[in-house]
Image (cartoon, rainbow, N blue to C red; front, side):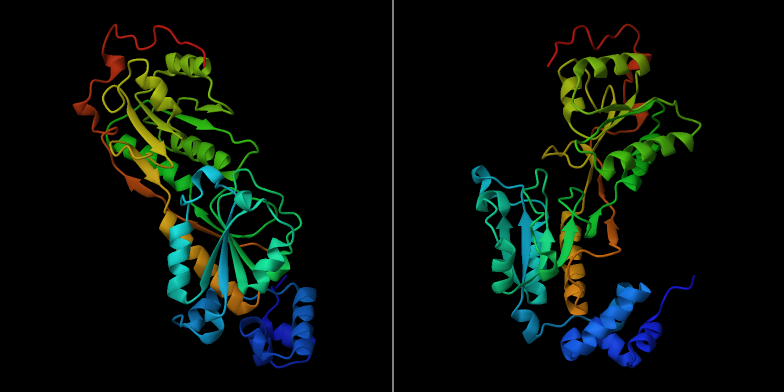
Length: 357
């Protein structure tokens, strides 16, 4: 069926096409009865405005008096009292972009605040028009939040409750690029160690799917079954390693590197090594870093558009913006000619004994 248009909404609501446009883009200029009539017609028809097209029409963003009276709230449940002053993912970029656009900024650490009742209404009373949801690995109870009070955008991959417009890192292409980087340097036996989160997140499937896709499209490499664990298991890793003997590893966390280091394998010399999600301050690592600044700034831009369009609450069809990760080459991935790859070093044994834990 043909998707409904703004003209269809205008005919059903008995208003002009311009009124429909104002209802979605400048709702403050439309009388409440007319606004409700237009939105009711849109709901019945299943019409939603094209935000991307509206962005192109809107032209450059300008500060205005209405925006200066508004604030955006950055909500996270990651911080604890032990790191009260610490920055969490995306926070600095969100705060900077709010300042650039003329919004006030409020940081809301739900774990520190003890999740007081009616915090959503308190924020709204202080002029908070939009919420940017940051990391919530152990989310507090959010079921009671009145989302209809705010325009809401979620950042990153860890979801609290409900479906939101989301800006997140793109995981699938970063694994494919990791494979390409290793193959371009001469590696042929590429393995991968991934963890499954509890509860599962979409990244788990994307990482695994990308690795399998890379194998399937590259007949010149040796197919090694990826090691997928819910928790770190040294004995499972040893069995996997001894069975496949990869000359390079794509790793989701640094547990693999620490285990290899403790048992005589020098990554970057005996084994090529790429970690996904950050090098945790170790610049010698070849790694993929998610674009924290880009995600934070894009989240604020999207929330700004939702506010300007008068869109609040949980969307019926949430949009997702995916930003590519940043490749950082390091000493753990070098051309294979410069290395002593252990399958060619006869008699070398890396695992003489593995202690549990």
